[in-house]
Image (tube, rainbow, N blue to C red; front, side, top):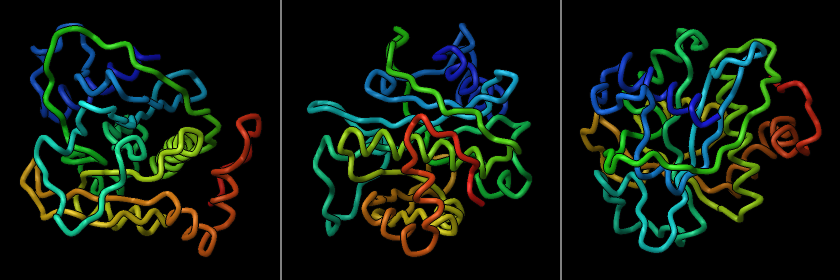
Length: 232
């Protein structure tokens, strides 16, 4: 699966959007040093084609979050301890599976995270996990929920309590409408467009969903053996 993930990242970041120089990735797969300590998730269509991906960067002592390359949180913000937080990064939906409204809001100038510098030539061998392709209509909101569901489960299993994400305000508003409350914790910076650093508490996310969309929370919490339809 790792070849699929990195090939999709190359197709979007290097070829479609031109964020990175394709010449730096002669094997047609985009990766960076953060992949060495990331968990990658992928969504597949019923025909077996990769249609979306996202990763969680989970540093250990001596390692960095991607946001630390370009952004500084406000000094008034109490940050979660290392080992309890992950940074959502490299969110990509394949072009043919994007809805037009999402194409405007995502913009792909920031996604959920921004591009981190690539350093080193060795391809990493990180942990990967699939998202079940049980999606009748493969639209980007459904794919986004499926990827978030997988990140939520992984976070609960590994006692991760908070998520960082660097994004534009329009994407933060979109996530808020989906009851994923990310709070801005930095001033905007110019990094492939105006972006800010956001922080989300998984406990707050659960409380918000419990109050506003308990069906969605129940879907998030379903066991791995279950394959229920996605609540709308």
